[in-house]
Image (tube, helix red, strand yellow):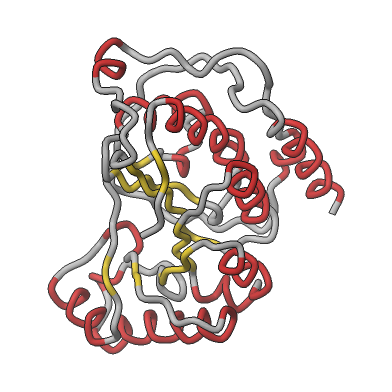
Length: 255
């Protein structure tokens, strides 16, 4: 409880600065995001965001591809592996501060444990998607288990929010014809991503921000995580990512 209160206070103070200063470096894009479950986050007690200064400086190549400011230049922020009682509310606070909505792909077992958190996420205008019950690799499972992983999660989300999900993201992006067919039978539309912040590897705030600001294009689907481990870096990077994209002419959409 003390750690959560300290996090909330520090983030609230940090959000009064819309362009914190960090030293940025290039970071690659990956299409894999393994799940790491952890019951506690001791690192979270030291979470802080520095205020003042400018957004990370990008390479000439990145600046060359800066959007022109047209409203057609849109990106979608997505978060996987929640809801989580500490970091999901902090992510929601950032989104509210900037008036931005995102798409959250939730695990059924987490929804069952924290229904109030996923309900809050939906009530604040965000979209809730299905991310299976327990983050198993669907392509390694028999059809009956694939169906169970998806259907039980949709039922848990519907019970918590009053609305059944229409989107699904298979863990690690692992899919095949069987997975896609079962998803379609359950009325789910599969959504992957085009840009991975690699926050699951804890690359550092600067690397995450520069990855997004360098590689974001019109229509990018950006992968981040609000659960599955210590997401302190994600919480710190999110205000920089949002403000940086806004300054570069992007607007935000849900899926």
